[in-house]
Length: 369
Ligand code: UDP
Image (cartoon, rainbow, N blue to C red; front, side, top):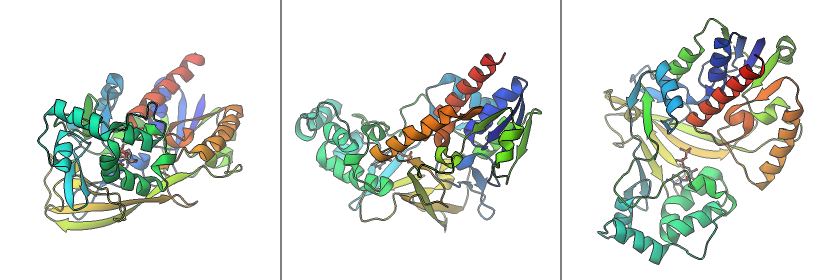
């Protein structure tokens, strides 16, 4: 079969590779001038720092097969994401852990004492089945930690009250009663030494794959293909005819510095008055390298306009209703499959994106053999 894949991010690349290995002829078209979608990385000419152009991407997973998969296309270096947060004139450790709790409350609790303190004096135990982000926070950390670390940050990030957001967003972050400040709780974590774009290039490097950058989708591609795989925005495929699905986009204010600006890769800003959510210092994502110069991004989020790059799907009640209408249209579309964060309008991490692409492509091959 001749299969057209729209988009050369992780979903497109992994699907292309799996289908090409099964003997299909694949054409991948990408509207941007680079591979890897929003995980795109490139070295800064002046400093030599590997810059995460669309914000930080740290690979972490519990999925052994996905970990082996990425390691077969790129050399991964050990990397531990250790995030700090500046709140009300002090710097704290994230995710909320024993150090954060002791520092914040001026205590010297041991683990069990901290757990009892939070549960008995902070957590709102009347909340039995937290639905919203706010309820989840009040139930597990209580109002003081919530206000300091989550409320302001989340309002800035999502542009709405945490009361209106699902608890699942906060469930991304662990709460720890020890000094483990590894941001992710997954077994495997690392960073591709040569960057994500090189990894995606390696995935797409197969004789059965024909790749075209700077090539927006045009409807004749669907006519030329036996099957089309769409990894762009779901509503975009239908020219947003039912209305636009809501996304948050990010603005990055890039600046450089001589030496070490903040001493860590990610510094969050919990205060609502600080306009940005975080500052990332990209050389710290590659601790095995050494650079004098430094490249930093001040990151802030806002509603995604028509010409902006979509990052985070906002899945509130209104969007979910519209999403189900688009899902119905997508299901009725013959010879087209929708994949990935944009194509399925979900907040997917890279490992899940790869897992879903592998599963999809294998089912596709099995159904046609
Ligand atoms: N979050 C927060 N304070 C922080 C970091 C995260 O309130 O200092 C909330 C915020 O709502 C964010 C969510 O937790 O959207 C998930 O955080 P994560 O670090 O996973 O976000 P990502 O890196 O994907 O933007």
